[in-house]
Image (tube, rainbow, N blue to C red):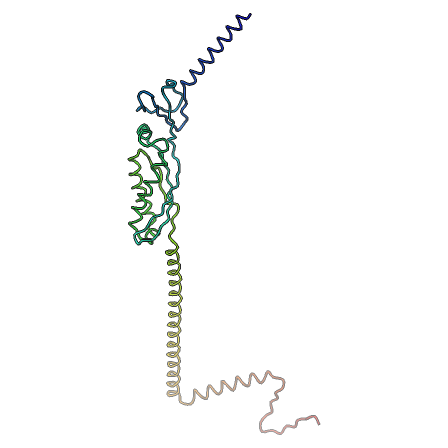
Length: 271
């Protein structure tokens, strides 16, 4: 019985050792990742290992796994415009490595290639592009600035084995002095618009007065011409119309009594 337990123990120990060896000879590459093999005797291998489970030589070879999916990164940069205004820009980048160049990236840059490459080339490209535009043009031609930054940065990143899927300007502000100058300019423009409105209003009132005076002059001329043609008849007509209007108003009053002319009429007045 003791020999049986001893045999079982040896077998279990052998299985455990064998399982440990097999386990150390296997490694997994997850979806969206790639691996580079480092050999202690031959260095970094040129072949790139794809997704799945793979074998390696334990203690001799070591897998270095890279994430090859697009990842975002925000890079803030402070630079100057063509007219020497301070500009704060934040650039959002979606990047991923070129899978076939992973051995070169690992050998020349390292696993933290994004930390070493992206901030430096982004700052370099942004300063070069922004220096071509005035502060006002950075606002009015933002799409053109973004396109030039994207083209130059994509070309620059390709030399390091990086692919930029998207480059966009997410934040663009200026220094305090420029902001105050813009606010003062807006206030001055509003004052100029208000003054222009006042001038236009005065001009319209002047024009209206001129037209009214011309109308009165024309009316007076017409009346004078009518008097010359009709004599006093027009004046008598206006008198009759005025008398008719007065008589109509008085007829509606209770305190007014009409007395026939040329007849003696007695009124009973209170004593």
